[in-house]
Image (cartoon, rainbow, N blue to C red; front, side, top):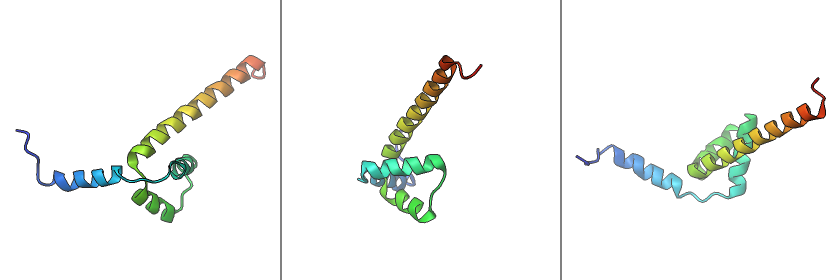
Length: 86
């Protein structure tokens, strides 16, 4: 029952190859930061797809979202407590 389908093996090999990529953390953070702004050159986007580790991108994206949401919460709390928003 646990036989693998023949078409799954190339997909798994591609996933293994993608996970084994060793791009620098700075490059991963740069790609995530530019993605937040929605400004990317297609050539850089294609190069990132070939070189960046997808797991690193996911982790960096989640960390960036958490920092962004935390900053927004802190900003709103500061505005409300300062009395600016009467």
